[in-house]
Image (cartoon, rainbow, N blue to C red; front, side):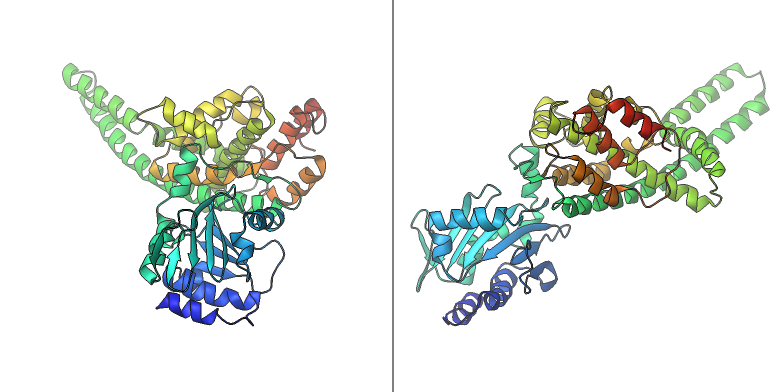
Length: 441
């Protein structure tokens, strides 16, 4: 029924291209492929650089598929015309974003689903009595069911299948297709803002879990110490058992004890001198700065990969190598990051020195999922061609909103970029740059 409505509403030769978007979005991407109105966006104003229709994932709201629509079916069916469309519009106008996995090229009677290289993955021609796969010549009934089955890979339910992440893990995802330029900084800004939001949220949740564990640890340890005081030096066997229990408890709660007896206490001491007083402010700054440190290190590694200062570890092919190399820790990107950080630590030691913010890496499955999404999105960018002009523009975007404090050795992502540009010969002398970063005026 929905397919017939679409065919009827688009049969008129007087339909404008913008007028075509509404039945396309309503009947095809809405009724047939399942996208609710909130998960599809139409570019009614024909804004430059914005796809005609954008489709958002059910899982996380990411812009996982973009649509370029034409009224002339020959623009899509003809190989040379389709290649020209891909080159002059999809690529030149920057329709492929950091989260894009599919590009749909369509006309009233033609649908092509392409990967990020422009290769056709699925295609359908809508004829008077059949659906036809032009690659095989196979015919299908002209029904809603047949259309859904053939176009399932771009359906709303399919957005939950995480095919893009599987391709990323296997090293099959296109990488570095968005060069960092003044024009693409907005896209990087969006990735950066999302990463900070997710990492900070994780840090706050993990911080509170550790605090609960710390309170539990204190209760157990205080009880053991009280019993040790009662028995004194006598009851040798009982004393030995209690000491063993105390050692086991400290081992079990090692991370919580380290964070709250050492790292957070040191942080609060330094931050008090900077003027912070209220406890919730300590926690907020501590978690936010931890997120910034983590992202700084991630971006540093990505830049090192692109300019050739290290081998690929956290971008496309590197993830695949890692998963082939290990067997039982494939689901722990924290372990991969530890290796990646150690490998580039010699390039910029200050960024990777032990600090009060290192507790971030001791996470769980939630952190793994957040890291995968960040690495997936950063994978789309190429940092190879950055220049000083772009670097200057990045300062406006990436300085943290919180006031920067001199607490140990931590830096904003842009300062890391600044330094690596110096090391790669693009920017100023690295020794001068390092002095400015470590001892800012």
